[in-house]
Image (cartoon, rainbow, N blue to C red; front, side, top):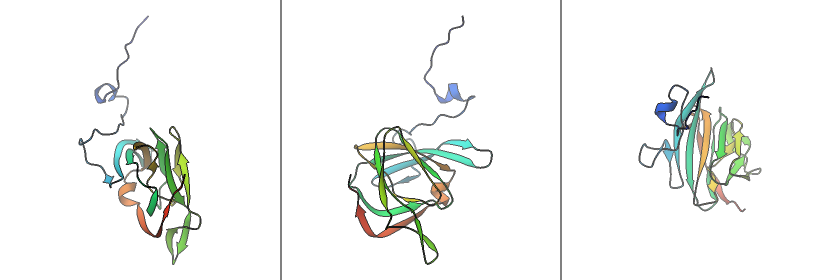
Length: 166
């Protein structure tokens, strides 16, 4: 009987089989987007859906006060957020039209809690804001059509900020 030895996956031994995705080591590359509360590394893996390229990235969030001052939308793209190593809370809102422009419907804004090992896929246009982790730092797997973070993102400052209570 043939015996095979288990190897840790790396770029060399997995090259002919596909791609490896992992959170970049600190300082090894610049984040695609960042602020005081998060760092997002896009294009860690790409999936060719035979029509459009699907991008996977990892965003690491820092614990912060759960106050939302902005919301974002991807008008033409769904988005996957999967809790890798801790629960998170995030505000979400449906779309409302004001003077022909899409805005978050603040009368229907709510907050969801996503547990570690769970994920959500937002429909096109759903308003949301960056996850608030429940521990000091937490990473989230992010997936959407390639270049969504560059070409299909609208961020709106809210007229009135709001706090989220657990």
